[in-house]
Image (cartoon, rainbow, N blue to C red; front, side):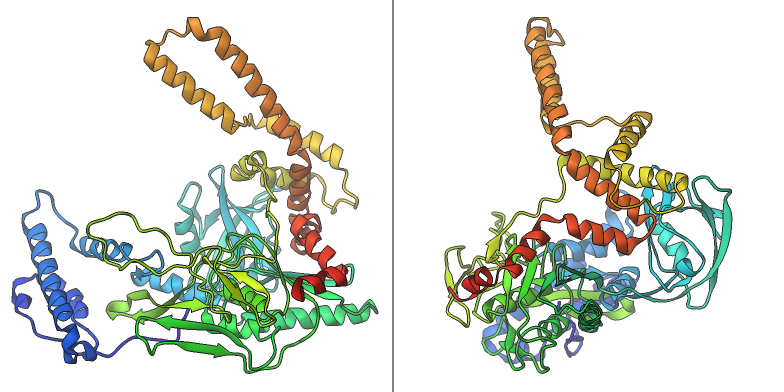
Length: 573
């Protein structure tokens, strides 16, 4: 996301409809009349400008009639906001309007900073649980840990309150205090008084060394992300020196990274590619809008073998970095084709602390590939955008070393590898928070961290007993389809299914057999996830280390980096 443009200059224009609309519309419509001066001066744009004025006049008339004559009382502000949202929905999913409160949240998202106590929370079975604690901040210093349940904030009970409301109660002015009432399994409830501070969360989720190969996971792109990655890499160097084993390669994990600021993507890329390399270019609506972004600092390690991991949720800035690494033949990309979000957003500050984030350009990789995955527009006689120019998945581009890479949007990996860490059964368990609740109970019964290797069989037996107590029932996809079939047949037959009973009973028996088989096949993944969740309740870093060790895609990356011939053959075929 590009945040370097703050807005455009323009002059307010007097138009005939102003005296005819209610006062509350003046600000909105005056904003709409702020149009770049070149349009009014260019003859080719005169019709477009007239259409704008005519449309604004129409918006004013419709709004006035609705506010004065609609059968029920209309909330005018929400009506206007709804109109803005509807207008923007005709463009793309990333051009959005933020009201005052949303603008504040958006600022926190891009800065990676907020005033709080350093915890992540989630609602499970109606209760608010601490799911992560940031080291060094008030919550960690007070001894709050993963699995604690918050029952009250400043003596106000929060059970069954919306999570967004609870978060607002926790956040507040810098230096202000708040009191939490905590329930911890197996202990008497207690209170802690904490002082809010500026919390900065590192965008590097985890870093470590496996078999002489470094690993850095980057969760998002914030203002300090390049420094976060640099510090993580320097930490790996120091650890390798302590182990007296030089780093043999680096795995840079961008899976599920939704991206962020454009200039940060360039800065992160500069850590890996040669100084002076073009990382990305942007092209906008006008012919002279193309701009190239070139690295201006030397890399931290220009020749260390590199693998970048991506999946279908790697987007925006993640795709810029992966695309640059691939097009410059700096490393090998492993995983799934990325999301294909290659639109540049400019942030425009509006009056009354509102914000407009609008698409102004598109990203292109150094080889000329468009990152944006163009979607076929819905057939609509009121379609407002011209049909986009697209490239297919078979369109060939060439890297710096003349390797073939392909267009069609997103980044296609050099080695395609499915990111299948979960299963439907495991997903159902996680959705209901059952692994988390079991781990919380386990921690209360075992104060010390369990020794390695883990007693998987014993833990899985206890977990299955826990599921029985919770009366958890897993409904597989085939079972849901059969239930729909039964309802449909009952509706057609008037509820008389006697003639089909034998067939349905046989089908139900087969469904139950398949469900048992699905659960059995998922047992290893459930055991992996359960071990990680239990470890998280003791030490989040150790838990992440265990999770990475079980990751099939990470194992594939380690295998490629350990085979210099394979690595070289991919980059220099």
